[in-house]
Length: 113
Image (cartoon, rainbow, N blue to C red; front, top):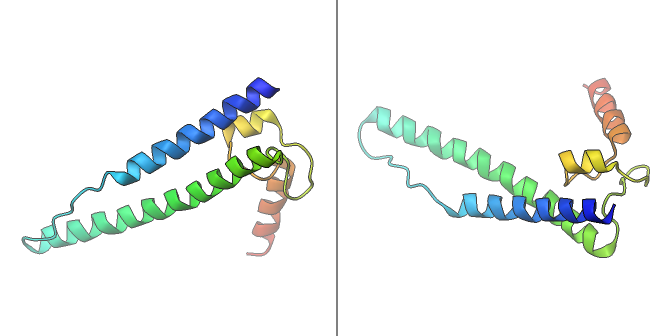
């Protein structure tokens, strides 16, 4: 189990590094030119903003998971306080919910729509 958790920790750290590297490469967007160039440039800017926001949200989850590793709380469900399966942690290493609680939360969310 300890080896599996170390592998997950390494996966989280690698994912964080990858996201930070991806966002440090800023692409210049040309909004000069004709109306079509301007529209395309603005579209690219908006898409980049959405990607950046998704990456920021993911980085927050990764940082929380890495902190939980440090204080021994990693892999414990925030709702039921049971252990999250290693299989689930391998798939979604930054999760804070076991599969049963995640499903219950999603079902509850659907019922409130």
